[in-house]
Length: 235
Image (cartoon, rainbow, N blue to C red):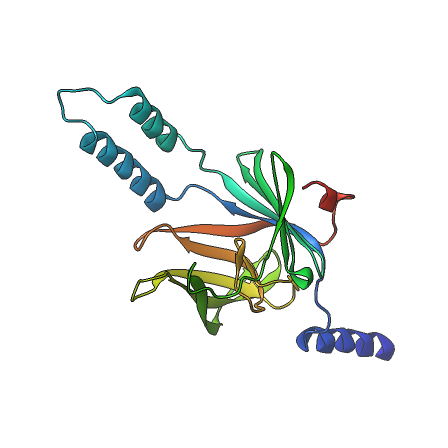
């Protein structure tokens, strides 16, 4: 009995110190319809229809197709994340259809994607460039604001993404709210594919701004601590 208690306390201490992290697994960050977002999309479609038609002349077929496409976009989207201690694979889906896939190898500074010509490799960590612009991030932590997500205790991060475009005096900003856990080791500072160039906890909920007033919330579902055979060959 004493040995059991000692072993249990040892595991608890290791977990508390951050030594017993989960280093591989899979989960899907899923977006589902949200009333505020759907109302915004419906309003935008109505606005486009009204503004692009003068009341006397009907819309041309290209504009009609564009509005129809925009108004009928599938609302169930997901980014399924497969990870080990040194690799991340993201499958982006709309409904159940795979629409994009890419792999991140932070230690090799590579982001690998596929196009019609085969695999494309580019740098994952990007150096700041005055000619092309660059990103910077400000992160504020609130460990008193917590949620239990997929069995992991998560705390809040407020993240401001600032893009400094060439010849612009003020940066363009996007404000994310994340709920992250330190008990899952996800390499590369992954936030919906953005490279923070720093390490943060694994985000199991992400509130991403659609515009200055409306955000889209992604939340982890179906977290598993194993990986399908050969998953990293499915790019």
